[in-house]
Length: 164
View 1 (cartoon, helix red, strand yellow):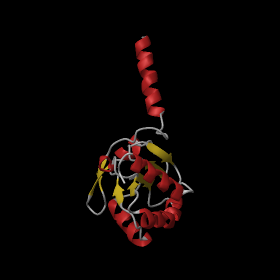
View 2 (cartoon, rainbow, N blue to C red):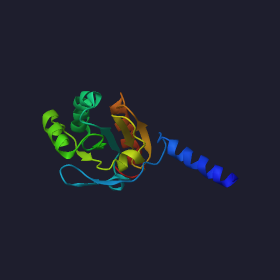
View 3 (cartoon, rainbow, N blue to C red):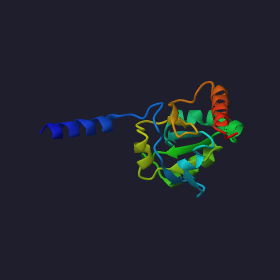
View 4 (cartoon, one colour):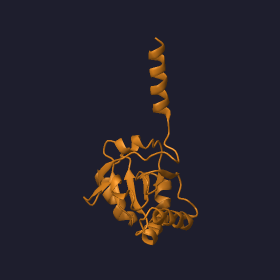
């Protein structure tokens, strides 16, 4: 009986845990809207990854597009960006129309069954993660206000690990 309760408590704690800064980012592979593959592991040891979980109907997601476009243009060589649509009430047609209307300057993907969304404990949009070159979550939620300082830190970290 005790082991059943312990197992249930352990399962409940796991289900209620939220990915935080310092956690290892869950691995995933998905297809970008342009058809090219995205594999998180491809960037380990190379450059940080900025993930944005979003929806077409999310007003705050739309409001952030100019800032994310600016980051994409300025830091394209320094950080990999992927905007992942959570698939909550969205479909590929809606995402394509959204991308054309708002002229996003960064890659997007559709999380058809919300598997990646669930693995990243995303329960609202937008939710953002920055994953360092070691695969560790170093930022969660909202674009860091000092993005330049973060990029400089990641570049230094990369150089210290021999990836300059």
